[in-house]
View 1: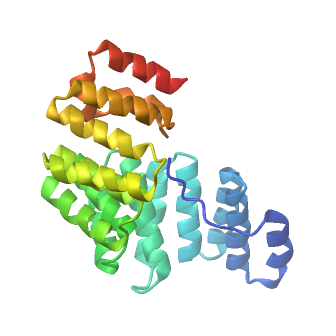
View 2: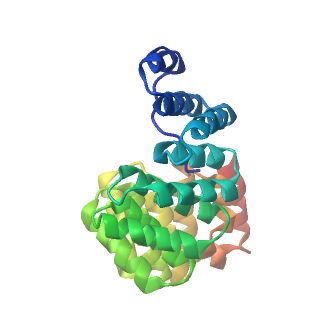
Length: 259
C-alpha cells in the first residue's frame, strides 16, 4: 500500500525545536512527527489547531490531506488536497504534493477520472517525472486506454530504465496490449538487472498464459512463488492469469504462495 507519510524529525526533537518556530510551522513540524510515528489522529488534531490560526496555510492543508489519507478518510483527504491546490502559488512545491495526494485518494475511491487528470497535470509540471508517468500509465491501463498506457510507461522506462517497478509495469502493459515479444524482453531484462526478483518469472508467466502455454506459465509461476511474491494474496485475482483460473495446478500454487 502506498503511504503518504512525510519524512519527519523524531517527535522528541521536533518538540524541542518547535519553540524556535513560528506557530504554523510549529504545528506542521509536530504533526509531521506524529504522522511519522504512526499516529495519524494526533497529526490531524495538531494540523487543525494550526489551521485555526492560518486557515490557508498550504503546508498544513497538505499535511491534513496526508493524515486523513492514513485514517482512510479518502473523501475528506481529497477535500483537503483541493483546498491546498486552491491556496497554492503556481510555483509552490506543495502543489505537486497536493496533486499527488489528491490522485492517490481518488484512486482509493475508484475515481479514475480525477486521478488521471491529476497525474496528467503532474506530467505537465515535470515531463521527466517517472513516477507520475508510471502512475498515469497504470490509470490509463485500468480504463483500457492502452495507447495512453504504452506512451507513458515507455517514457518512464527511458527515464528510469533499470527500475523493477517501471519495467514490470511496462511489461504488463505490453502483455495486455498483445505485444508479447516486447513484454518477454522487458521481463527478461528485469532478471538481468535484479537477478532474484520474483517479478521477472511472474511476468514471463503472464506472457506464457497470454500465449496459451499453460505448462510454461505454471512453471514460471512456481519459480516466482519460490522467490516470494510481494502480494501472494492477489495472485488468484490477476486478470492476466485468467486462462489458468480453473487449472488445479494453479489453485495449488495460489495456496502455496499464501504459506
